[in-house]
Image 1 (cartoon, rainbow, N blue to C red):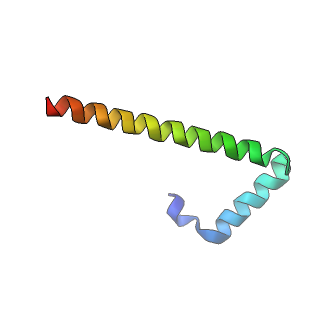
Image 2 (image 1 turned 120 degrees about the vertical axis):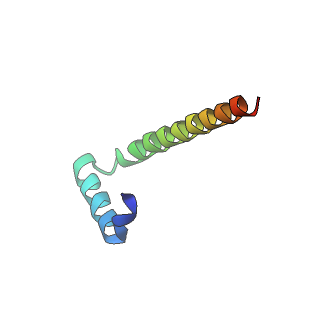
Amino acid sequence: MLSNIGFPGLILILLIALVIFGPSKLPEIGKAVGNSLREFKKATNDIMNDDEDKSGK
């Protein structure tokens, strides 16, 4: 899904976000999105590791 956006689409999305949220909120939003992605990746890795441990026993 995200591979179809392309660079111009990404620029457009960032400009719309800048207009909607303003320049002072964008770093906070970026930090929150980054933390959410990090937690999701960690949870996914934990689930995968649990599955590997269970199938290995």
